[in-house]
Image 1 (cartoon, rainbow, N blue to C red):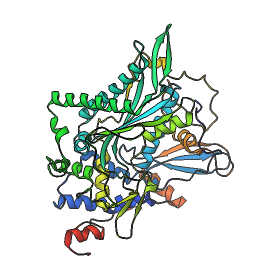
Image 2 (image 1 turned 180 degrees about the vertical axis):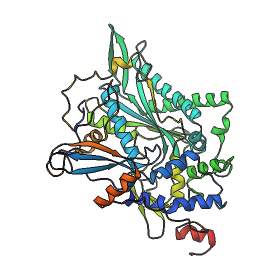
Image 3 (image 1 turned 60 degrees about the vertical axis):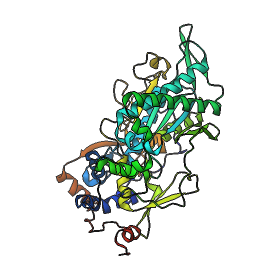
Image 4 (image 1 turned 120 degrees about the horizontal axis):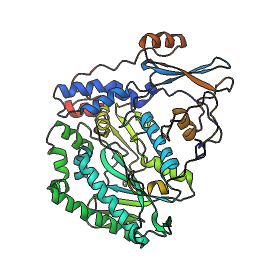
Length: 494
């Protein structure tokens, strides 16, 4: 199926293989991961890295390395070869794998799920005291997500004022802030209006105008429903906990790690150094800016919208909601041993970046990995998989096209939404990876090389790295790499 969205770049760019071993993120993890494990084993850090997070941290160090296996593309016209490394398929923080998942999911939603109507993003954030529990309790987070989504759906149905009116939504459950502190929050993309039955067909009515007061009413209604839900389940401790509890009241070592990642101010996931801290949350409903309200530490933002004819804007909005927690160009190592994360946008106090120790960064990366069977994308309303209206509002399948030229990626049978890597690169960046760099002919896949006995001689012949870069050995106490944290731990700069 041809892409419904033109590439962002006017003409195809030149493909260059991604080399993760040269990035600052790879360097930080490779140089400090074994030190973190040693510090935990020695009892210097009273936390525990969950098994699923350890697995992902270790896999990240193999992601994109040719020496771990690769696919070989070949051009019959000039005998040119191109190697494509395998990925780790991480779900937590790997920029490459998360970026591919973001692009593939966005493209599938645009082409197969979302009708051509306006989208509005509703972003709900939770107070600090709630975050540690929501990060590990997927069932509770799912319940609160459902209550919020139902509240917004009810608002759209009431504004439509027609019997049986329904809207739909896709909700992405993000786990971190832009500084990688643990911050479970929701990016809910709603069809900005509602459908209703009219003469046997579904009629669409777009929301004419959204008022800031209505956003405040939705937040108040959602919080009342959440409070009732917590009372019924005997979970009022989630709502009444304070920041001190989050830092010092963790029940076990894994909770201690999450609590530290939430606050970002205590080891091992902190401290971080900024030019100040954000202002304290308001205890009464406040209107921070148009279509943005806050109450008791919750915030709800609904000002971002993409029109029905803005195809590029709708896909960009989906990518934003599904984005990885960290981009490689936002991370850099500093001469003092600290790692700097540049924020996507400034804090309320003007802070543009945060500095932290490499061990603190890895702890935050570990908490960003969702637990197994923790769903990060949810569908509701007319977009829910079981909704009888989903097939009626979804884009109609395109007419079958001619057979793809030799070397082109083949789409899965039966309406499969799997998108080949080559298609994603073309759709997202305008890069035609199957175009031969020499003769401009078409390359085709001829081999998947996975055996070590075949990988080593081939890479030796083309001058590529034949072994995985060695991790730096564990440092001795006090373990911290930065001068700042060593001074705190030992009282000197050594």
